[in-house]
Structure formats: C-alpha cells, structure tokens
Length: 326
Ligand SMILES: NC(=O)c1ccc[n+]([C@@H]2O[C@H](COP(=O)([O-])OP(=O)(O)OC[C@H]3O[C@@H](n4cnc5c(N)ncnc54)[C@H](O)[C@@H]3O)[C@@H](O)[C@H]2O)c1
Image 1 (cartoon, rainbow, N blue to C red):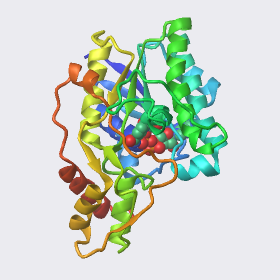
Image 2: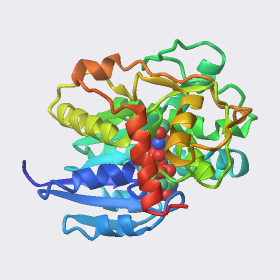
Image 3: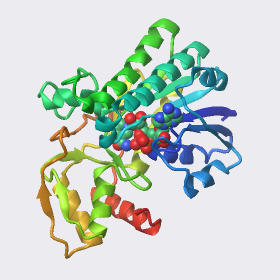
Image 4: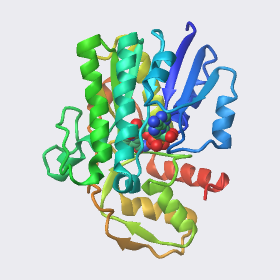
C-alpha cells in the first residue's frame, strides 16, 4: 500500500484509541491523532501509542475551523470519533455536550468536503433513533433507515442524540453541496478494555469489586459487541469502502446477540465476587428498554462470528483488574 495519511479525531477515547492502535501497525500509514481530553485521559497506554514513529499527536479542540483547515489535506482519510457523552453530562452540561459533539461534526465534515479528502468516516450512534424506540416507532432489530427522533427538546437528555443526528445529516449535506465521500458507522454498545466508567460493564465491574451488588435495569437488554470485533469490522469496511465496493451511506456496527443486563451482572459476579448478593434497581432515567441493531447490511459485506459475551466480559474484567483502573 502506498503511504497514506490518516487523521483520527477523538483518538484518546475508547474506540479511537483501539482504532488508532490497530491502524498504527501498518508502518506505511502516517497517523495524525487529535484529542482535547475533555472526555479521556493522557494515560501511559496513550503515551505508548503516540510514541510510535508513524504517529503524531496534536492536542487541540476540533471545533476550531482554522485549525481544521490547516490540518486536513486532500489525500487524507479522516475518522471522526469525537463525542462528549456520559449521561451525567447530558443533564449537567448539555450546552457543552452539543457544542463539542455537534460543532466538531459540522466543522470536520465541511472542511473534509471542501478539501475533497479521500474518505470521511463518521461514527454515529444508536442514540439518534432512541426516541423512536421509546415511542415504538422503529422496529427491533433496528435497521439503518429509521427516523431520527428527539422526544422532548426541553429535556437535556437529548443533547447528545441531537448532536449525533446532526453529525450524520451534515455528511449528506456536504455530499450534495461539495461531493463529500463518506461512510457512517452507526455504533451500538461496544465494550472492552480502557472504556472508562460511564458504561454499564465497567460500572458493574467497579461496583462488584467494591462489594456493591446494585444492578440498574436488570430486565433491559443490549446487544454488546467486543471492541476487537468492532475494530476488525471497521477496518474491513474501510478497505471495501475505499475500494468503492460499498453502496450504502450508513452501516450499523453492533451485534445481534441480545443479552439482559441481569445476565451480564451474573457473569461478572461469578468472575469478581461470587458471594455477592445482586440487588435490582430501577433503570437509569431515559435509557431505552431494548437495543438491538439489524446487522443485515454489515453481514452482506462481512461474515463474522462475534466473541461470546462471557469471554468478552472476562477479558474486560481482566483488563480493569490488571491495569488497576479503579
Ligand atoms: N462506545 C460506544 O458503544 C458507542 C456507542 C454509540 C456511538 N458511539 C460513538 O463512537 C464514537 C467514539 O465513542 P467512544 O466510546 O470512543 O467515546 P469517547 O468519549 O471515549 O471518545 C470521544 C473522544 O472525543 C474527544 N473529544 C470530545 N470533544 C472534543 C473536541 N472538541 N476536540 C477534540 N476532541 C474531543 C474526547 O476527549 C474523547 O477522547 C463517538 O462519536 C460516539 O458518539 C460509541
């Protein structure tokens, strides 16, 4: 493969870090990694990543249009994984959530379009249609072509969802106006090492290790995909997309193995603290009861066999304990 420059926005975050680590293995690729750490840490693993000869790190706020115009070059492949999420943030600092998540989506897509980059990859979210699930307007499993719904604009819980909707919409707008070549990966419940604590899996690991058996929303279900599987899919789809072999504009990334949160809790309890008593509690306000992507489009391009939830949880637990993350 010829030398190619890949720009990754949100590279210090959960998926961005794992994606950059995988891409950095191709020494013919030059990686430019961007993050402002509003939602991530400059930890030893990230330092090790950026110390590689083919990685350059720029600490910057990607809302800044002047910075983006200087950085992005026509031959670049650009991955935009920026978001400012976390349920607490949706309620406490919703203006910041929209500013970081939406302005970056608007500005990066526009500059990629004007510069005519080789490919723009945007990381969308199942939250974009969560209002439709809540109101039973979208089917389960959920395909890509469903309406985006904001149930109540006065409720700050929707600050993240509307930002992710804008992130997808601007891809189409820039294709119409400037010919942007893009693909949206619509992400559904990825989990694994170094994912922070704002998600159910690490939250349960931490609580169980500390003797707290509370399980929020045990009857809710999610379709979890292990991070290594997700990265493999994203890389394979990127190759096909850059070869012009993908006709869709958006592809669900997720698993069709639906599990109850109770099951996740029981697996983690056995791994961490078998004597612990699990205590069921109400699900977090506003979280959807079920989430399951239709991954027919994904399977049209790639055959894959997702890692089992028990193996994925065991690897994640191992990482949190080994790296003393709490
Ligand atoms: N993790 C999942 O299961 C999941 C589910 C649905 C959608 N997604 C989407 O996938 C993408 C990656 O998710 P993640 O879990 O890795 O998120 P993350 O929060 O771990 O990473 C996002 C990164 O963006 C950075 N960032 C935020 N604002 C910035 C700004 N203005 N300038 C520069 N950097 C900025 C943060 O510091 C963070 O490092 C996001 O766009 C998210 O919406 C993820």
